Amino acid sequence: MQERGFTEKDWKLFRSKIADWQEAYMDRLNKEYIELLSGEENPSDKFWSLEERIKKDKKKTGVRAEMSRSNLIYNIISLMNEGANCFEYLEEFSDQLKETVRLFIGR
View 1: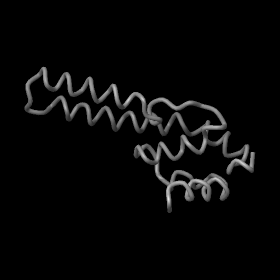
View 2: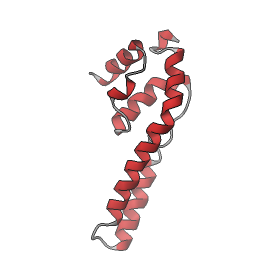
View 3: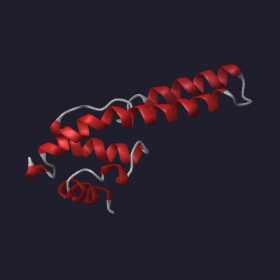
């Protein structure tokens, strides 16, 4: 697996951490939804805005990730782009994975 930019340990570590990352991300989304619903707009406008927002958000990796080894790097990059995690979350991962992610995100 090292030729893919990560190790077997990275894959196992990712699987152990993804649920917590997603829970934290969805908690943040829920707070944003509460803020949206607490606004001064008409109830119908808030309802349809929330419906549209949830429709978009539920497709994000921070909510639903396709769990396969071949998607590991893609999932991490997507989580970063969505704000569901950051580079500091990768501290325990291999240098190889961190370097692969850096190459893709330009850090």
